[in-house]
Length: 385
Image 1 (cartoon, rainbow, N blue to C red):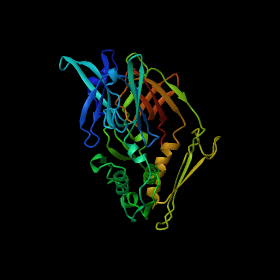
Image 2 (image 1 turned 90 degrees about the vertical axis):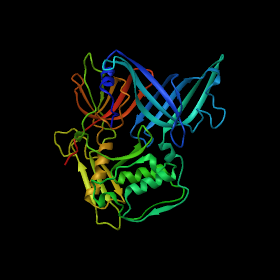
Image 3 (image 1 turned 135 degrees about the horizontal axis):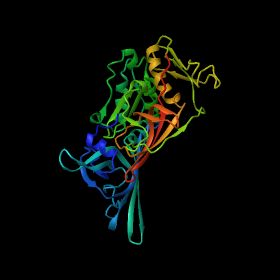
Image 4 (image 1 turned 120 degrees about the vertical axis):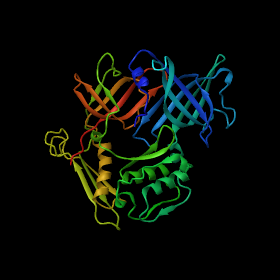
């Protein structure tokens, strides 16, 4: 969900009475306490992409006068492996306090992957690439085999993978899934990994079987959430044309190259009753009607942890959101909205392109200096019943 910002900040996004501000905090890797704050950022961006386990990545370009930031040891401020937080905000006049105020949106908590120092004619800059804390999960395989008994809560499995990856319990905030039945949140058979299995692949596979998303928040907390229908969510922003609008235009693309219109999920456990759930587009007026011109395009997913029809429906919903929303993609060039989060629902209205609907924000790049960003979104189609 988009970060809550003040009314003054939201108003300033739409006005010319603002100034972009950026800062980078260098953190202690263990406590995440702030060791140093940098404001001399020349350029850079943070990219959010919900299709990846590593949801956030960044690039930075920082002035490096006299080599002050050149990594000289593994403990230098900007050496690889160092933890940093990146913010973009606005300085704007707040009439309620009668002065200029600074307000920041947190873009992410990252590990530096690669510092590069460039020197030419006694001038130097350092460029940094990095990724969010999913890197801890993705950076290798399991050191040994492990198994969980049947009737294990899925959060227990997520937490164990995180622990092995070096993520402490204080850095986790998982949905307790209290709204689900035991059959929907507990394993129905033994779950195991082998020595050397990829941790990221294992975790992504397990959470998909429970209809969940797992990712790191901007503050560096491992969190989880159930897949939701866009139609059930309140838009965090409404884009529309006009002089006071942040929307600079829209590009609409319709493609059926990767589209499916029929999802089948089956349970494969020998310990469960046979479970099966199907979603298909049965609307004769829909361009993706299963008996229409595009034909019946099936995605079959066999899930060992699916125990009953309800759980199969949860998995099918997530797969439908990921694979059956590509009926319409849009790109919205916009003034920078640094507080957006991946999978936020935005509403877009633009009469010339025929766009008037809710969309899931799938990928966007937040610039640290420029005022313009582009949001790539998928149309939030209603899930058929």
